[in-house]
Length: 193
Image (cartoon, rainbow, N blue to C red; front, side, top):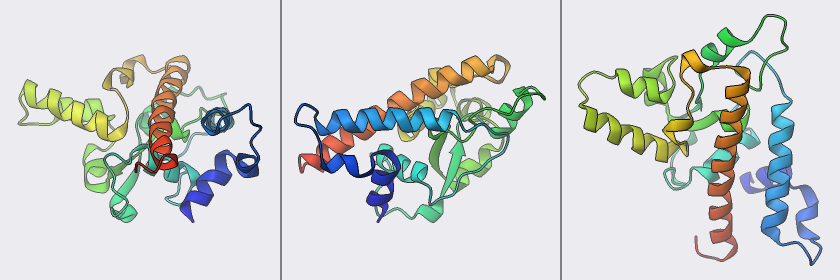
């Protein structure tokens, strides 16, 4: 099942044999941080994420306040919050790449929205959409930030994109995803979901 895939991706069998001194949430936190560190080592220059990957399953949980379990995954695209083309243009030729496909750079977004924004990050997309008032732009930005579990202030503008700023973005976004995931997991473990 999908739960098993996520569990195996980040925790393995250790979750069932917890030392009494550690709580389940501590183990999840440690393993999620380890998983993030492993993803940060996967350098590349191309888009490489499938809808069946553990990253997508993790995003389904982390974004579950806005993606119901009944939603069809086929209506979603795996969105790169900092678009691949923007990242590729900043990676030096002699570099093996950056962690473009790190889960922290990914979100599930309805395919129509994703395709209409093309190579822009979601902040640039909203700022350039015609017919929106400043107030409606701000509302749309907040709504989309909530949906994507990504504060708009951490999204990097094209002209400020560096390897260091991208690393900071990944760290901040992963912490937001992890926090949201842990909130959902606590509700599941306490039968509140």
